[in-house]
Image 1 (tube, rainbow, N blue to C red):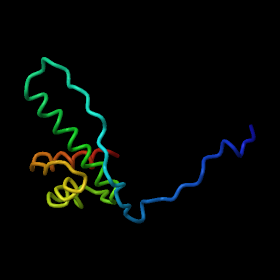
Image 2: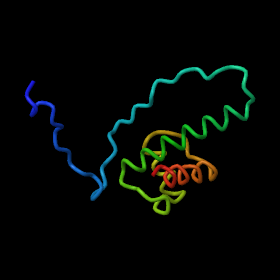
Image 3: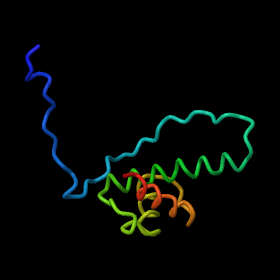
Image 4: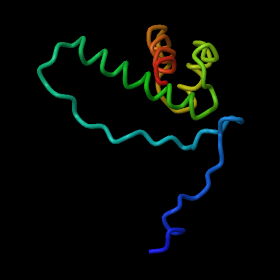
Length: 102
């Protein structure tokens, strides 16, 4: 196989401009959670999943810094991707994911 065939294709950087979300948003197929855990574990697990989805959607739309992601912007993004509006705690968690993803 020629070496040129193994060379990756050039990609266009999106860091200089925001990118629109790929719509319609299709959530990952849900699987049942493991039984027997305390209720608080399920609540925190689902909160982390929601915060991660929102952080990914914000990053895809060009919001790269936590201070750019206020509660209103996070809630607007939640409406855009079709999830219930997040609580203040979940919004805080979204910013924490964005802060520590580096």
